Image (cartoon, rainbow, N blue to C red):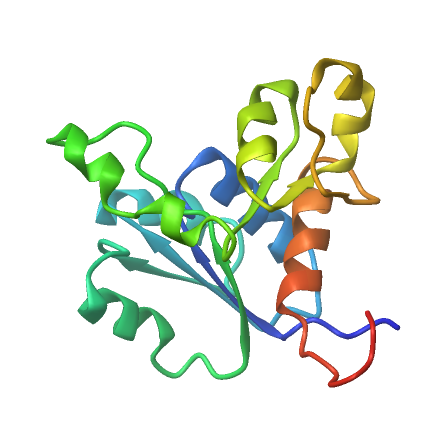
Amino acid sequence: MFVSPAPNVVVTGAAGWLGQNLVRALAGQPSRRRIRCLVSERGDASMLEVIDPRIEVIAGDVRDPTVVDELFDGIGHASVVHAAGVIHPARFVRELFDVNLDVARDSFAFAGDSPNDAPMFAYFTNAVGVANLRRFLDRVATPPAYITARESGAGFCELVDFLLAPSTSGTEQ
């Protein structure tokens, strides 16, 4: 059963490599009305705003409840893609430990597209490989639980649409 994706999308971590590519892919979908993006620095907004007039950018820290309130204010029915992550801590290494993944690992879905994601495929119960990973499965000791049909950014979008589509009680998707 196909379920139409939400017309609005919220993307955290939109200034990162994955976020930027996802925003570009979403902007290529005419059915999307609004694409609201969270970036950590206001200076990162312009590189996203030039992509498409439907893109709205909020600057702030995803760990700040006030920023999250602003991010979702007035957005209505939306799919949410949480692509934010601290890869290079701004001040302290302890920023990397703000989320206890041992407690939350069954609640998260991890998506990756290359053999360097193998440790995450093994760690997260809900690990998803983007289709281009199929070329490298012989190099992945623990393959992901699921693999998308599409490759690259389209595969990440496929996963997001599936995860955040309105659920139909009692009906498999």
